[in-house]
Amino acid sequence: MIISGWGRHPKVICKVVKPKNIQEIKRSMKFKCIARGNGRSYGDCSLQPKLTIDTKNFKEILKFDKKKGIVVVQPGILLKDLLKFIVAEGWFVPVTPGTKFVTIGGMVAANVHGKNHHNDGGIINFLNYIKVLNHKKEMILCSKNKNKKLFYASVGGMGLTGIITEVSLKLKKIFNSYIDQEIQIETSIENLLKLLKKKSKKNYSVAWVDLANFSSSKVNSITYFGDHSKNPNFKLKVFENKFSKLPNLFNYLISMIVINSLVLKIFNFIYFVKNKYFFKESTINYNKFFYPLDGLKNWNLLYGSKGMIQYQFILPERTSLKGLKKIISFIKNNKMYSYLTTLKFMKKDPGNLSFPIKGFSMTLDFPASEKNLNLVKHLDKITEEFKGRIYLAKDARMSSDFVNKQYNIKKFSNFRAKIKKENYFSSIQSERLKI
Ligand SMILES: Cc1cc2nc3c(=O)[nH]c(=O)nc-3n(C[C@H](O)[C@H](O)[C@H](O)COP(=O)(O)OP(=O)(O)OC[C@H]3O[C@@H](n4cnc5c(N)ncnc54)[C@H](O)[C@@H]3O)c2cc1C
Image (cartoon, rainbow, N blue to C red):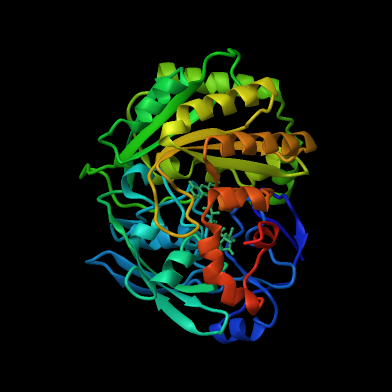
């Protein structure tokens, strides 16, 4: 069948199996293969034409210690379903990406980061252990203390060390389902970086950045700060998205909306002005704070038939200001319109292929047009010049030379050498990047 990541670029014919138990996974492991969660990574990391193993049948909650806030789950459970269960019990995940339509296995394999990364780091910091089914079809329990090498290679390892079959996760206590939110407006990149770095009392922060505005010199931004509310008047309540029953018609309508530079400029202008003049401090539910995009089903169709690429890079703190300025002026000069741009401050994470280093990370969303695919190669050069790196969970196009300059691929490859011999666990991404 033809499958893709969330960016819908590339789309590839893959043999996909959806095993019901571990025996079925083992039996299917005759070819090189890769695990797939919910396909919410943007590029080609969850695609293997020979054999892609859909893990979504593994969706059980195996144990839950309500007192200590520890949950043990199978990898294919969707974050939205885990939240449904734990929020009602007064717990939340300690790290969450910007969508709840991901699997826990996918979150671990990408070592996902959230809006609290500058304080708490990635999901790797909250794992008691994981179990990995390796190339010899052995089930190995690994953690920071046991089978360490496998643990640090697998968390953030993009499925290349084996299939994660069990995850034990420490949760975060919450008292209700709401987030106290504040915002702050800035109009220059210098001030935005200072603001994001400043120690805030709120644990979560992320900036929305307008790179399509009418002024060529200003960089308008809105930074959202938030923390779990402790107000006893609010209740623990599960929030979900309700989608219309007309998905196909809706999808076609969405894909027909033409987003051009003018539409984007006007949209961003209204959004900025609305927040600048009319926003007050507010308390909103966790769904609105963490997952605003989940409200619009299949928003990835807005980018047209060729799909989209998300360019997420991080630059070390010391080079961030200069590097971001260069990237922003390149984007503006070349009329590359990013539909959605965000900026976060992050700290370094452990894990051989983990993305986060201490510095600033920007995400840019572009339609996957030929023009943009060529122009992002220049963004690679600037990222390289300023010693940055690209997030593998968003990548669909980097070169192997470039990835070697960013990550300690040698260390990872040495570990993987034995696995490679058996020809197991490789994706289109790992083959392209020669990992
Ligand atoms: C709207 C949106 C917002 C996002 N926001 C963020 C964010 O804020 N922070 C962030 O870090 N990421 C973010 N992401 C990226 C997303 O969190 C990751 O790509 C995540 O890995 C997707 O999980 P998935 O279940 O869809 O995995 P897939 O996309 O199916 O797979 C991703 C990788 O995980 C591997 N994998 C999946 N399951 C297993 C398993 N059981 N065993 C071994 N390997 C496995 C796959 O081989 C692949 O390499 C966002 C994505 C979207 C679409």
